[in-house]
Amino acid sequence: MKKLLVIVAISVLLIGCKGKEMFYQTDLEGITDFMENNAAGFILVVTDNDEYFIEDIRMAASKEKVKIAMYNVYEPTIGEKENRPNFPYSSDLKGSTLYYVADNTVQGELVVNKYADLQLTQEISNFIKNHK
Image (cartoon, rainbow, N blue to C red):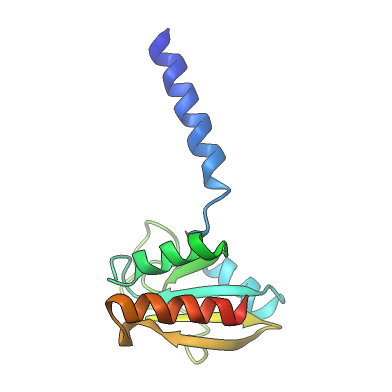
């Protein structure tokens, strides 16, 4: 009985924390909201969920208290890999780049794989502060 209560408590905590996640993976529908439905915010476009800069962006989102949606062009639906990107916005959004989108257009972009270490952290922080 105690084990069941512990499992239920942990499940409730995990479900409650999920809605507060500042950095999250989105699907093509989420990107469409930014590019066609006037949603405003930050998008990180990647080709691999293990890019070296992802943790820096996750930490910056938490620190700056902004939501950042990550879209993987090779895994547009979480857990379902494709052999090639199926990304209708490839002329506007390139991989390894953090974007700020508002009014259906890209308002700012930061090519994050140009930077490393402390400079990467500073560039991400400055980009977010300039666009939030």
